Length: 90
Image (cartoon, rainbow, N blue to C red):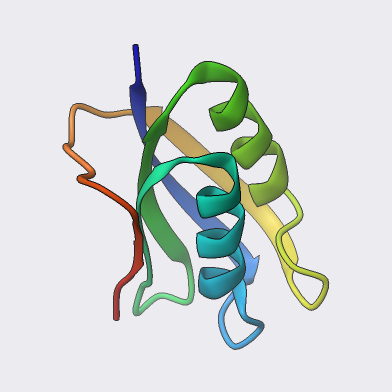
């Protein structure tokens, strides 16, 4: 049964390709959801899928793409519907 989570990533995560790298990783893992930049410099999103793949995605969020410098990842269970695919929102 799929599970859904919300996440917020802080640090140097904007202007480094974080959203598109997260989309690529999520699609590779077969996850659904979305990701977007926030006005405070963080990146936030929602993701749903199977347990092992969600853990791999969560582990990836802890470091992000090579140019990122992740400071912190907040991860919380969610009842949000993420739909199909994984979208980069503005």
